[in-house]
Length: 235
Image 1: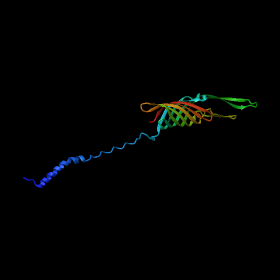
Image 2: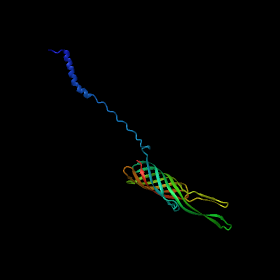
Image 3: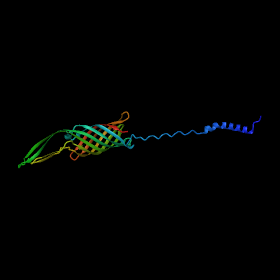
Image 4: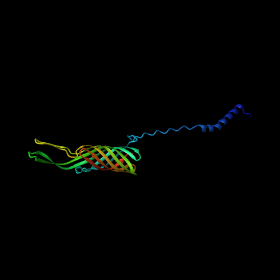
């Protein structure tokens, strides 16, 4: 029995399709996977990447002049600000500082009430006993240079205000008028400072022990202070 030409042609086509099906299936590319989602922006920082926060806490005291040192106790010292790390071994800071200065003591003043015709003086004595709260506020630019591993040398310059915590006294009577301004009274001053800091990587945060000397140049005197603080280095 002979197959018809049409049936032979159909069988031939079927065999050809079976032969090329695996090749055609292999050539079909797989659908592309979805693009990875864009990473969320870092919102944990509110400062530019080149600025870093820092803060420190400790206590400070007046060293000289002696009559002011005896008038004030050591008090809490707080500092905070921002810094830029210009190089690996150099950074520049803008600091704000507040130091409490508890004031206590006694003072005795003698004043001339009047002079007689012979030039003799009649004096009166005034005694003061106080307990008050003075303070020192300052803002300064400070450079820090790493001289040794973990060890930084500090130097700064700025402007500050000393609130003496003591008010001036005014006395008046029909014979005389007297204004008493305590030496070391409140006022503005230029500030220079120098010190040293040792950094410690404490399980992530960088902490540092600082010691700093400061000089306040005022019209009536030159006030020198010391402070010791523990500082936190922002990331």
